[in-house]
Length: 63
Image 1: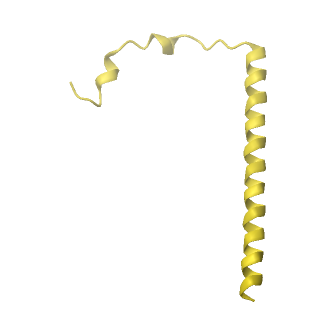
Image 2 (image 1 turned 90 degrees about the vertical axis):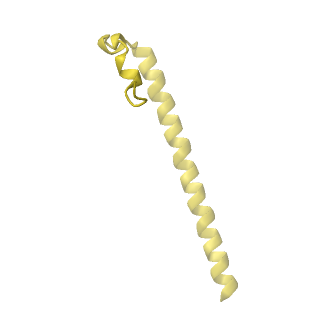
Image 3 (image 1 turned 180 degrees about the vertical axis):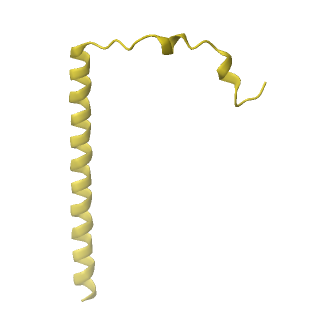
């Protein structure tokens, strides 16, 4: 048995079931995703500000 096809012989019964997710769970996941996106965005802005401040400092240092 090949290592690449080892898992394909198993039953795929889990794929036949429809996904059941409550409305409250969807709202909670959406809220979590939006918070994570906000944190990542703030981190990106903070990184950009630090890089800009460093670039200005280096530019003034060599001038």
